[in-house]
Image (cartoon, rainbow, N blue to C red; front, side, top):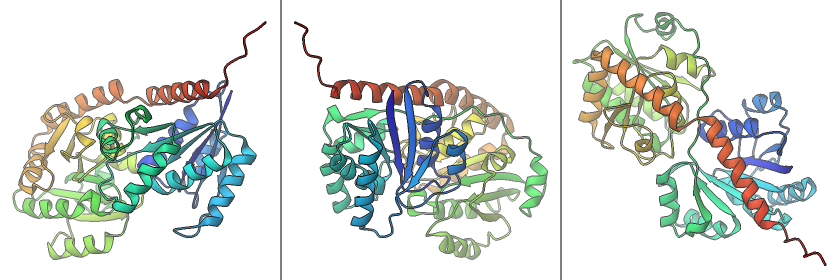
Length: 375
């Protein structure tokens, strides 16, 4: 049995965190003993780990550069005698790989979940250097693997494992009641955005698109779920575009599946992704997706078959796609049904877990010393 640690900065309800929890819960307990650690702080997903019997430890990193946290993490890894450490997201990837090397952890796996165009010269240099401390860097899409190959990560250290999605029962929902809760007319058409309000997601493009649609599709309303550094600016922009009555900023929500089930379309105007969780979740709920042709998104949304894609930043096409789907419920339903079929065929959670389990065991077997020949 392999002892595995999953290390991540927080346990907020975001894409990488959801994937980590899904993996931790799904790894077969007859083959793996699983623990989790948060580099900075916990979050609402810790309850799901606890329910699955996965203990969580906090390293309590306090500063951007925190050598004391690195020391605590190194001691924790040494004491835990883990066979495999998997790290998620830049900070945990950096601290985790350094600490695992110092602690002598046999197998180190790094999960990369996006085509991280935000990274500058320093971050890229850190990635290139620490890639030599990883037995595998796993991208959750071909686009992510290609990105890190382009940074100089050797091909023999790269692997692609698609993110997975669980086929949970759809929530019972009254769409009219959900609209009323938001202060929208009960018969309004509802678009839903879910994500961090950061430059990557290009939510300002969505607001400008909704401005284009105000007069041609006056019954369209939009719910924006999530928070982030751009929230105040985006709310100000919505006011300037006179969208205050047509757009609601809902912040973090614990009932995203319910909101999604009540919506007519899910929209994602990103500049780049990895393999967007929100799209997988929407498709599983048979919701049509309107998105940009961002790296990663194009591997899950098939334009014209499971959703509609537009060039990044091309607002007229994004507006036309939104308008066409809210005006044509039959087409929206057909795209949603095809999306669900594709999600369950290509992106099942069970397949993601099985591939990571196989990877851990392959890497661990390769590290074991060869048996001495018998005399």
